[in-house]
Length: 233
Figure 1 (cartoon, rainbow, N blue to C red):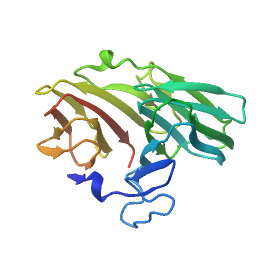
Figure 2 (figure 1 turned 180 degrees about the vertical axis):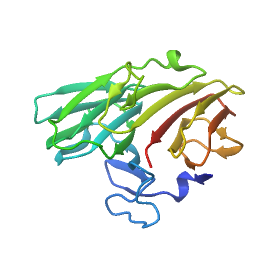
Figure 3 (figure 1 turned 60 degrees about the vertical axis):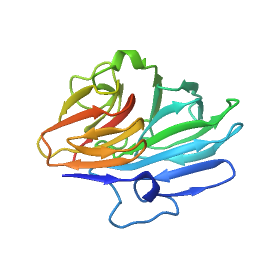
């Protein structure tokens, strides 16, 4: 089962500093049929204006992955961490017992990000933060784990969840496959380009809610950049 969720039908909001689209219920957008997809709780598509950002605010018991599409995001938190994550790279914040953080766009132009929140399978642990570059050339034609709590993903940023976030870049006409374990649920979004997933067409930034599929075959119609979440049910 693959359900296409077009970008233009997503919830969201437009502020003077933020244009945001929500694949699941979040903030002022509520849809009881779209609360989560397995352990995946939030999948936001944000465009942040220059010299603005998310002011300090708290989180607890959530794995928060930020995939930067364009520009860069600068992170600050109550543990003293500070770092800048550029386009194509990823940061992970494990909120654990509690953390305050801010995310700013200090760049001259807009910054666009995907925010991905995954429910943890362990609570009561100290909060943490990390960032890592993932060169797009190293994921040409294949999926690479960017953040993961599953065995075998030693090069990915660690998360405390039975899930992984993966990225792939594909040239127009090329395909790649991903095996989805029994009972697993996946959510795929092309950051750029049009793709087909097992024959279902997606435009840039559309969502595809996937379950009961053994193998995902992703074919690029245009040059494409794809982000996939594989989550426990």
